[in-house]
Image 1 (cartoon, helix red, strand yellow):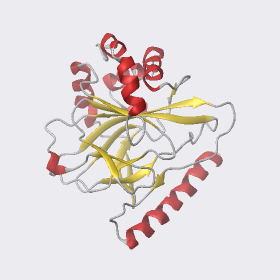
Image 2: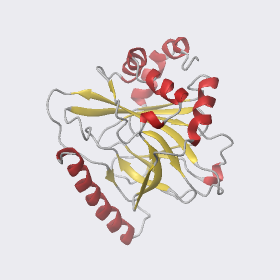
Image 3: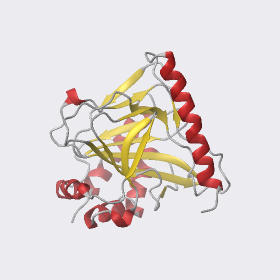
Amino acid sequence: MQIVDYDKLEAAVDSQHDAFASATPYPHIVLDEFLDETAANALLDEFGVEDGWTYYNHYNERKMGLTAFDRMGPKTQEIIRELSSPRFLAFLSDLSGIDNLIADPALDGGGLHKILPGGHLNIHADFQSHTTQPEWSRQLNLLLYLNKDWESAWGGNLELWNENVSEMIQSVEPKFNRCVLFHTTATSMHGHPTPLTCPEGSSRKSLALYYFRDEGEAQSLSPTNYRARPEDSNLKHGLVVADRWALRTYSFLKRYTPL
């Protein structure tokens, strides 16, 4: 099964590098028809796996995730392996200008994501270092959307916000086989904070892969930094902060508490 068309990706990488570097509010790019159509459909077909999902259900997010690689379908595993391969990592480096990228075999926080009606993900900057590989700094997010016949009225757009979360700069509809790549920093604020209104039986589906770099020394633990929007109530601002601190405690325990 062909998964990605490297001839197409590599032929356009110079212009994509410039587009990535100059994008606002931070370096990113949107690539449509990212996977070969057969591979994208295979990934969607295997998305219905029933076992192994984790429910992330707290104030700042309401979604489901599957990080257990061995629970995923064989085509899904094949696709993730390809998107972790040396050639694909070389493409990512050429695109982003970031060298020595490492794919995460643990899929920590990544893997398959599913958001049901009413689900949401508040604006946030992602954790900056791997929770169990302390010397790894997080560098890139790859988000691949798998939503056919998605209606804009349902919401679920990926929102990219400026550094101080005073203004939304970009809004990306989660269309089928659309990939969003962005540089992961302490100020790469993003999310989809408005609850989904898709009908029962539907969901917002995506594959999330995160890429790291080994810095050779332990990195500070910087968990996900959730933020409220300017229009949110004072109560919501307070609840976002309280939940953020609870998650910091969880991240600390995950890194430093022996299993």
